[in-house]
Image 1 (cartoon, rainbow, N blue to C red):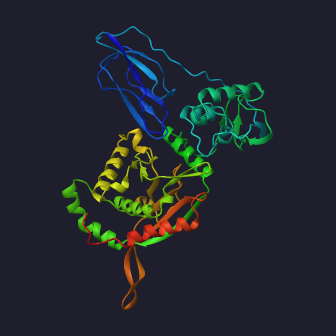
Image 2: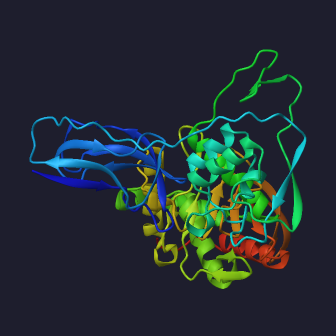
Image 3: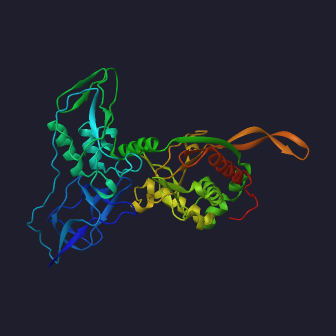
Length: 442
């Protein structure tokens, strides 16, 4: 008999930790090779961790809601043992303190010298840190003022608990260095109808209401959207495209395409194909910012916003989209969309995007003002395709015709993408779609 360590697996290039959501096995339970032992979550996607050996669960080292670094031993499996083990689970639970904080308009906090982290610009907060901050009434602005000791300046569980402890005692907040200036940070105001206690804030509502708690994914989406707007000065440009040739071509080939390729062709891969061609002409759209440095990405990884049955949104990524033909793009789009809806996405499927497409027309919208998917600098939205009478130019002169029209909008980070580049790129995509070759092969 031997003990085999089950470790937190590597979940993606930029993912350093994951939160334990649910243990499906307990000490004493038998487990087969590759059988799911627990469910975990990152800020992008939920995943399952399979067993790396067959045997009996000897001990569990972390409990639900613990945040565990990648590569850390999370459980041990005794191999060659058919009987149940008597070992009890070992839990390392965070020490959580409840504070009493009187409500006030603002508090003066001593600010440190400029920190090496980018604050709200690129800072990542684990779900556990966000939960602690929410339960202790720490606003996002206040959270950004806490120096982090984790990787790349991240705020760890230890950092925020130390901060909470310092705030409770009323002394200097732990980890804040000697100040050269003062910064006023507003605390949450009590709105009419709110009642407060010493250790938490309760809200009462009048009238006929239903209260729905945000699920974990919705909380993360909300935090990402707020952080993106706070990070990037958003500018949105609009244009429209006559996509009649594209619509007629798809109508003509879709049955044969499905019969030959075994999958349906939607408009999404056609849009992505046009975007990729334009990115090659305007590579600065495919970049990110690191402080004062512009990181131009040579790889083109297109994210596509996908609605889940729960109503939440996730963005799986088509890697190296420029290296795929239309058939390859179609199969990737359909596979990732199906996996997203069925909860089968892997953590790496949502990592590394360099540009994002969102199809707001799926739900009938004519246009939208999308929020940038950080750390990218642009996101393009396509609206519903509608038949409209428009003026068309012919050799015989202008005439009015019924055409398939679509609005396009693109939000971009004005720190790096100016109106000239943003509008020029968006217009180029529209022209690609308008000039679609209706006689092409797929």
